[in-house]
Structures are given as C-alpha cells and as structure tokens.
Image (tube, rainbow, N blue to C red; front, side, top):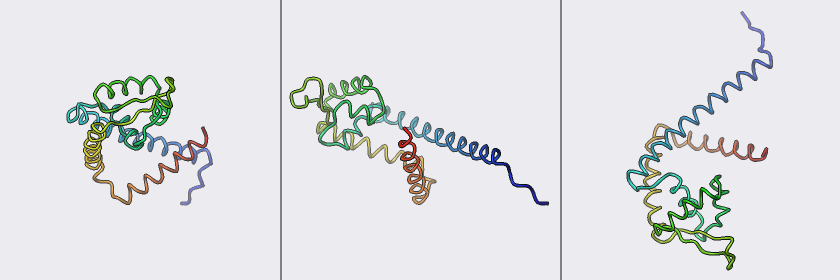
Length: 159
C-alpha cells in the first residue's frame, strides 16, 4: 500500500513539533548543567553564576570593559551588573576606573587576584561541563556548536 504525500500543513506541523522537542531538550540540558555549575561554584568557590559570568567576560578582555558594554555582552541590565561589580570590587577581584576622567563612564577589569581566582574557577567549570557531557563525542560537539552558531547568526539578523 502506498500512502499519499502529507499535505504541506502536516509537514509544517511535524517540523514545528520537532523544533519544539529540540528546544525542550536544549533547555533541559542547559538547566541541568547550569544547576550543577551553580551548586559547585557555591560549594567550591563561594561564588555565584552571575559573578562567574562577569569575571569570565572581564577575563576575555584584559584591557577592561565599559560597564554598559559588559551589561550588553551579558544580556542583563546595567543595574544587575553594577551590583555584581560592586561586590567584586569590595572583594578585591575587580577594579573600576574612570574613562578619560569622565565620571559617567567607568571601565572595569580583573585585578591580579581576580585573574588568578577566575583561572581556578574556569578550570573547574570546564571539568564539570566535560563530566556532564562526557557521552557527547568531539565530532558531535563540534557539529552541534556549528549548528547553534548558524542559528544564532540567523536569529540575530532578524532582530
């Protein structure tokens, strides 16, 4: 018995359901990894994930970042970043400086202590993610990464 081709609406629905299942799997995997990272950062380094994220962004930019660029990079409000940076400054992990004497803008960067602390956290974080994704082959990881980069690029163009 030969079946008739599915109508376009049925194909779209099937595609839609597959994409919905993909999104749910991505979300569950992300939440699981994030939950483990939060717990371990707290237990091993007395740090939060937002604090780790701020330090990671600053680690990538040794010359520092404007606060506005930092919040834009992290996709959070200036107010959220300010509170985290204030605590990092108090703890001696980040320094804040005015840009060209302009009191309205400040550049933040990791201190030597902050740089060393982040290196330890980042190495542990990499081990945790490696442990959680150990069943994913290097090739699959590279393919998925490439696919998600393409998705991000295509999605950003629509914004």
